Length: 289
Ligand code: 13P
Image (cartoon, rainbow, N blue to C red):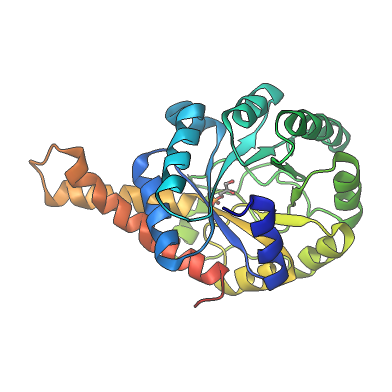
């Protein structure tokens, strides 16, 4: 199987993006893998600290390893939004392909210093691991929100991005470019969409020359997605849309089968609902639709 860096290099060259989807149970993991296999596209799955607490760090790594062995699918596992060095090291030792060290809530200089330390620590455990760092706080919850998160950072500047990448030596940069974690209710209903600053993305790409991830993908305007990818976004994260699909699918199956108590008869409705989202997002990120 190709390495994650090879897959990112190829995607960047072709100006497409690799989809990254979070999971916290087999329903979502199976849905993502089925969708990617159907489209024959590489895909990333991620577990945040909270998701890891539920799934287990070594369990997540073992599940992904089995899925990989079952097909040639380039499937990669990411330790999403990791705030402490100890948790980053735990994921690296368990065999994760990528670790995101998230110091975005720290003052810039402290974020630079801590991310640099994390990159060194990760590479000493596994020289091939991909390490991502973040600049700019864009909220933290993949949830349906009543209002925008407080203390959202200003857009990342080209000078900040260059200093951050040059000093920390991260492989991937996650900047603030108008994106936000989670969805407002108006985004869930489709009335409103997240809008991105495409010019800024192009400036960051030019200043850093490094891979970039667009976090907070849920509810983003489709055309902004396309333009952001053309301007230099190589990974796109989607989580809230998947959680909403899971809930809606499971709720409808429970409602339609009031006496059913076998989880494996209820959960496939959640899987199908998630798979529809992942198929649509993967097609969009690869310009297949
Ligand atoms: P959304 O929940 O807004 O899609 O953000 C997901 C994300 O960026 C996870 O890292």
